[in-house]
Length: 233
Image (cartoon, rainbow, N blue to C red; front, top):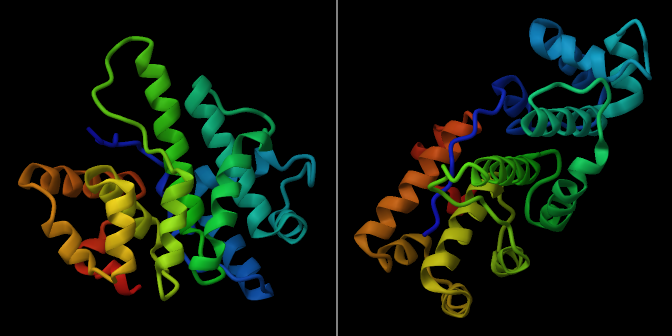
């Protein structure tokens, strides 16, 4: 069974990860404004970037670190908080190495400036942390999201770049689980539409797949997808 857990991720962070953020002066200005109006985010940024500016001057922090630097540190801090229950004084960037690795592998399949591949891998790692914590108490009834190499290989059969690559990957991961890798690969090579793939699933599998979509969307605070066709985005 493949059943993903709800993970309450901070919406002020996930809102950034679902946005298009290009490297520019205007982006830096918008990011500074966004951080300023989000008190919790503002306090956290100033805390974990003291090495860059002890006084917490956001303009300097953003200029030196850039969006990716800020994103990576924040993700590392949230991951450590999930593991220990405490926010660290400094960010352990080793915690995001595997997340960035997934993002780099998916970079060619999504337009530049989008962070949804990072978001998916961030959620996946959070599910693994949560699973390990609950596994010890034997209270878990779900499985963590695992992004395997063969899942990324499926993207090579796509003809267009996808903005919502996190949702597309989430579909492919579940189709792989229900249909099997070889069968799915054959179907994708034959350009089978995603609606047709969904129709191949049993009623219970379809219900579980939709449940996983809702769980992921609620976790990353992104439920607009249910009015969109991700196979063409």
